Image (cartoon, rainbow, N blue to C red):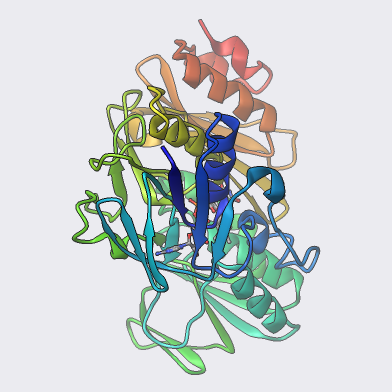
Length: 388
Ligand code: FAD
């Protein structure tokens, strides 16, 4: 293989380049990214950057040692066999890594989104005491932006169509446990946006919520529209469909990160997660496949969120579970955990300020060990001791 092109200058793109070199690939290598900025980390954008505690989240990379042609501010527009089409001409390749990530879902009107470094700085500049911020969506992004906005003294209203915060990602009964955290904001649950207009958000039912700034945080979609009609198979949700080795159906073309959905033997279904940990680790398998290896990517997915002064962590895949077990210590300042079981196997866990529980639960899931539900529910027992 003489020339590999990596499309997408985010974490998965950078990790692909790093993995290719680490695995001994010595040929030509180009990293193409639509964003003109060098690869940066996104989780800090809704945390330290938005709170004003950091300005920059550029990812560290030894560019000279990587010996990669950096083609930033350049967008892939199409694909033919052996040729990547871009807005500034064609690039020939023998191997191609698709790592174009995801784009936030927008609403018509003047609402903003938070995905890029520029988005974060622009939003931060507008979070001032008294600013009326309306956030559409009480999901992970909504929670973290609301946390920063309250900290900045803004007047925050959150409009959420579902019955609880985080209910797009977690069952309502679990998301509802976080509702008290939102005490500093006007949280409208079961409220649906009709239209976003200059100066206001209109709700179905006629209410007008005044807004100086509207932040739309209603999820993201794989940034794969440019692949339509290229022969790359996309899932109904728009992700690149890849096998357990992260290969697309096209020879020499692999995909990793937010844009890819892989076949999981662990969960017996195709998995699509938009998590940092996935963008960090999947590229090593994609690179190995490109170089002729036969590795499998089949992790226990992991995600974290920092909101309202709490660390929320999630591991696994709770739809695979059929039973929910709570672990609720009485004397630890709002820390708790919930576990999903399928039969006697642990399949997912969410923890609040209990990182050790999460780490141990993830290990049990990875090992597929049977567990005792009563021991899991007991906050005085280490999670790892629940293995039977
Ligand atoms: P991306 O980061 O989206 O990178 C893809 C890159 O491809 C982008 O730079 C884009 O410009 C480029 N691109 C797109 N289309 C093209 C094209 N046609 N041509 C060329 N380039 C293109 N996850 C967690 O687990 N925990 C968190 O706390 C957390 N916080 C987050 C906070 C924010 C504000 C955001 C936005 C995400 C957060 N995430 C978090 C998710 C995590 O950041 C993503 O899973 C991760 O960034 C995915 O990396 P990626 O490289 O696959 O995609």
